[in-house]
Image 1 (cartoon, helix red, strand yellow):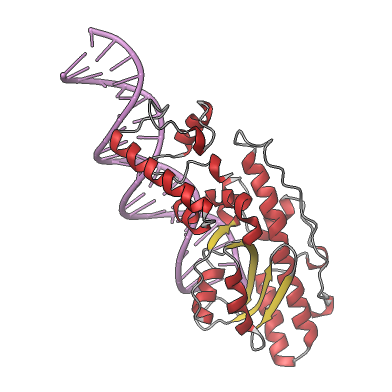
Image 2 (cartoon, helix red, strand yellow):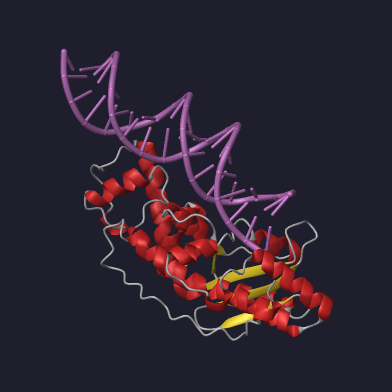
Length: 271
DNA sequence: GCACTACCGCCCAGTCACCA
DNA sequence: TGGTGACTGGGCGGTAGTGC
């Protein structure tokens, strides 16, 4: 999909990209190095645009996902999914609250094959090295919450490219948060229906107070569901975005099967 | 060649929405 | 509830197209 993308180039917005596509300039290879362009670009602007296009070819050959992530708007970063899905990890965190002193409680990292859980006070150290294996992080609201929170709380620097599904889904008209969006798209959370981030804070506090691992299990189940559902959300969002391009037939994104939740939900633990 | 118009991208400030 | 990134709208500047 990236070779069909011009939005990361300077002076190319949605209107200009659409015009390029309509005039048969469907990929980087179609860009005319001489002659007229169907869009209004001065000589100097065209030079600048073609320079970035040239660097784009090198970046794609080098699988440099960060190059494209830095140039695309957050709501356009879905285009990275097609070329870099194999280097992606889905990520969701739970915390003990929102204030300055809040800590990371549970993290799930899922790469489409296996999910790993990290728990505060137990194995958070392993997270720091595990996350570095991935070039692309996919989250919901991660750009605003998860990534800055992790960097502050764990003293990490996470330089990976990101697809934040929040602005992508917003641009498709899905507002109201992750749970509401999942419901609207037909993703069922089963026994975790109605559980939210505030409940996650409650479950962690009860686990800390009582040492009862059923609270941690339920919290882990919630965090696991939040994370693995991101893959389905990403596929659905990308599919919907594709329909607005001339390339809907070219890319097929079968819905991934959601892995079984390895953690048990104890309903008596929920408030 | 000039003036005008339409279009587009960029920038900025204010507002909104979302995370746990 | 606090923090922050995304969104929105308006202003500005640059360009192409058109008509004279």
